[in-house]
Length: 126
Image 1 (tube, one colour):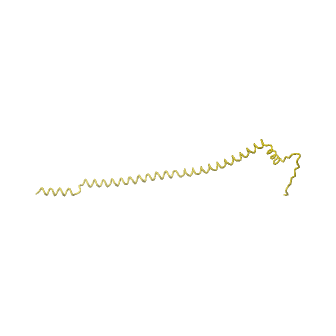
Image 2 (cartoon, one colour):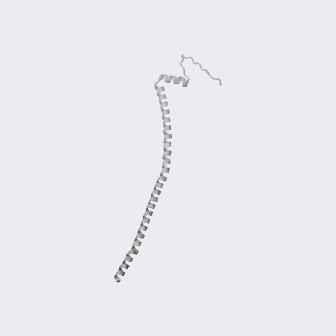
Image 3 (cartoon, helix red, strand yellow):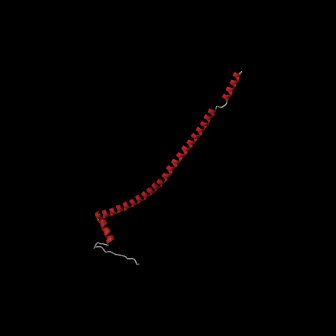
């Protein structure tokens, strides 16, 4: 009946966890933990790179806004200068081409008058 004893012993060994299988299951658990940790580290790395990109873009956006404001002020000054230039150009052309405007301007600015006219001036008391 030694044979039955051997069978029972084989069955007991088969039901007992094999030392190599427990080591494999432990390695699998460690591998899963390392894999999860790697994912976490990768996520943190991605977040830090994104945060750095945003942090480096903020000063540039501020500078861009300042430059846009400066450009708007310069364009406004340019429009004012162009308006003054166009007004002076129109006045010059009127003086050059329009004798009535020239006469009116001469009377007003230079106090000139036609010899046939009588000029009355009223001065205010000071």
